[in-house]
Image (cartoon, rainbow, N blue to C red):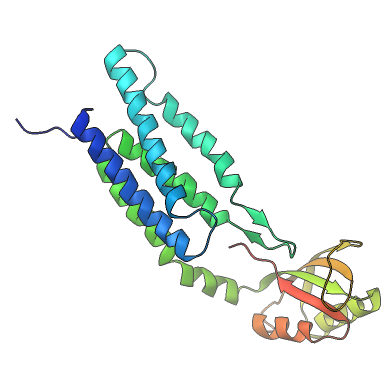
Length: 232
């Protein structure tokens, strides 16, 4: 008698768990290479736990004839957000990190749910697609960011006069200020001096290259610190 991998039995439980460990592990290895907070074990546990929950839901539905076969899975989809939020960090330089890792954890949970219900084709294809998105598309992301005319900046100037020098440089190079926020007494200590913190969004309008603009601003008189605000 041929084994039916879509029915819930001891063999299929083992197969689904191993598949969840495999796919979750592959996703976790990629994050581990990027030195992210959530790596191999976290991704495996998320994927494996989601699979177990989905199999439990299927078991309750089949053996007892009660419960919605998708109810517990829906709770995983919403609940994984709390874990993902814990991987998102905003550094003292206002750099956002962990968005991709958080999205990856949510995607790993969806893979686990697919494996747990026996949707093997969707889990395998989805796992490959997620892995390719996190690896193969990284150079494209860097290319897009590097060639974008929009730039969000984090600037610390030693005085308002120094910042006016930055504004004059933008005017001279025809760089448009889209948004500007001043935050005094920010409490950030620098190696050189304290300063006044500015968050600035600019549009280079293709009049100047992004790398050239960043380098020029860093060397302006009175600019103690400059960094592009990006997500990683």
